[in-house]
Image (cartoon, rainbow, N blue to C red; front, side, top):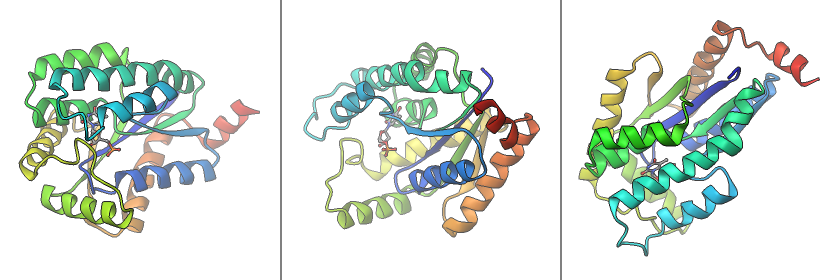
Length: 225
Ligand code: TMP
């Protein structure tokens, strides 16, 4: 695959969705061929399954069903969106990916980590992020931000947003574990800072990585012409 695959990870309230879309806009402005997408979701099938996996009324959902649904969403997403874009030499910016499954289902739900890794491996079809931007925030602060946002939007929490602080502490520990295992790919940014400055730091890192791989915006534009 010739392209470049960037994922965003972080707890609820970390600001990753805002930062991911700002990055997409900034890269487009620089002339790169880029698509912004998300998980769970990213395709019509994925968005339908998202509604099921996050439905607050489906309290009976078993953790294994949950992990397999996230994996099914990913398999479709890779086949339909991510791999074709990367094969064309484009950039994919994805709001959450396989690390979320390891952090939420593996560490948060305490499913067997080897099993979660195996499921991730099957669903990912060998596609792995080149760079992961992880926005680190304390669980309590993230949850407070999330609740404020839900109130402002007059929205109700989804099935996973209903989890308690202890769950999110475990998820955060999971992300920290991944960052220790893969410090090269998994870049940690402090989410508790001015969003403008954070955006500038993320963009800087991404452009540096793209240049290192010889992916200049002009080249990408030439390819598109
Ligand atoms: P979002 O907040 O980024 O829209 O993601 C929706 C929720 O899905 C969020 O609570 C994290 C959760 N999630 C998992 O539990 N496992 C996964 O593999 C993914 C992609 C998301």
